Image (cartoon, rainbow, N blue to C red; front, top):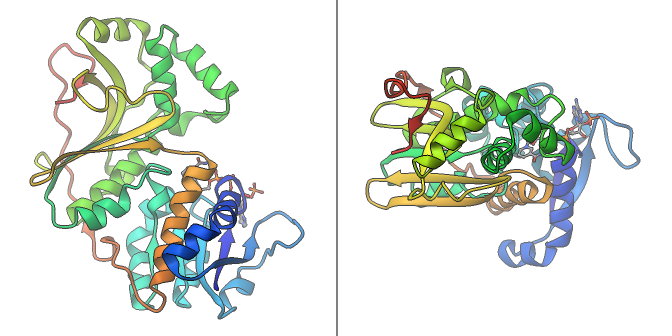
Length: 339
Ligand SMILES: NC(=O)c1ccc[n+]([C@@H]2O[C@H](COP(=O)([O-])OP(=O)(O)OC[C@H]3O[C@@H](n4cnc5c(N)ncnc54)[C@H](OP(=O)(O)O)[C@@H]3O)[C@@H](O)[C@H]2O)c1
């Protein structure tokens, strides 16, 4: 039995507990052992839940911690404490990975444990591990991703004729958008995710602050009419272009021939081009309790298979990237076209 702790028992944290319980037979089959949630830590006073991180990091039976709290603090301090004790940490927290991922990965390596973050990009879509392992030898020249389900849901509804304000309000009513939707609709969430992916495949650390970022708030029904007349759609993309050394987030015109054209509603899609493998497409639910928790559990299993060893995560040695401006929009055009 491998003991696990969950930090932050909200949407994703409670989902991790659920996936571990519901899929115990599958986990036993691939791991040859069972996972047991020994501790849950939360800020709230819930029976059976601990509030003191020291209870967890001082227990030598705990081998893996899931950090599903979000935000920088105390997630950073708690992750640091766990890794220093040789406890692996699996995170869904893109903000922390973007800001401290390099440092935390180096600490993990120093203490023979691991820092993994599959769930931080693309929710339930396996993207970090395929890039880190299956494509480790590839020269990745382009990543273009629909990485924010809220924006994609809004844009899908605008394509069907609604204006931005109506589409946003409906997304909020259905629980797909936060009451304060700024991080989503202004592109910041997508910026964090594309920065993590660019870092993973380039050997340089691209940070969120370096990503040129334009959201979807200025898109009008007339823009969709123009796109349709040209046989295209409008999608908010995070784009990493290795040849141009640029990372940006912006609404793009996406032609019908692109696999990203048909990615609608809350779904995410990530297109990756490698010089040998050619185009790859990753598609699925980019958020939500169980899909995201499923990605966290995939990391837990990998850590559980490697107790006492560091799993290289392609982040530990990254030097800061120098980023170029993204290519200018064509003269007189409001949008770039995805090539
Ligand atoms: N939701 C998604 O679909 C999704 C998808 C991919 C990645 N993520 C990432 O996963 C992380 C968690 O997201 P979530 O949606 O699960 O958020 P959430 O529902 O707000 O869960 C976070 C939990 O952590 C608790 N917490 C906050 N500060 C704490 C502290 N100081 N000590 C102990 N517990 C604390 C919160 O308690 P309170 O509620 O009392 O504050 C809450 O129970 C975030 O980094 C998010 O970006 C989420």
